[in-house]
Image 1 (cartoon, rainbow, N blue to C red):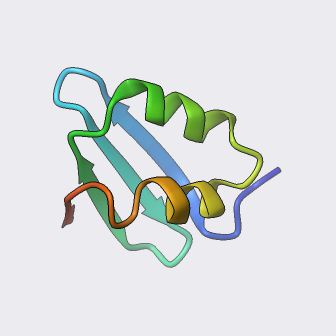
Image 2: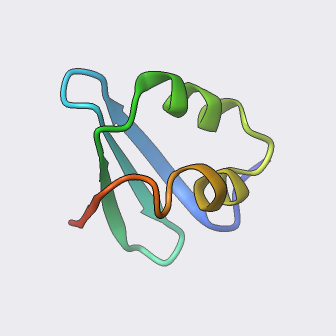
Length: 64
């Protein structure tokens, strides 16, 4: 099921950067995200809820 918040996500396992492209068009890189967190987000029924509960406020980020 498509997310109403997350349009696309990409993970760089070497740099541990999770890039989230939001439906709004904004792009953020979340830094030092372990691969297991990315894998859990991929498997989550709701990407937006997972993002809010497990990534936002827990990892530093940069607006791209």
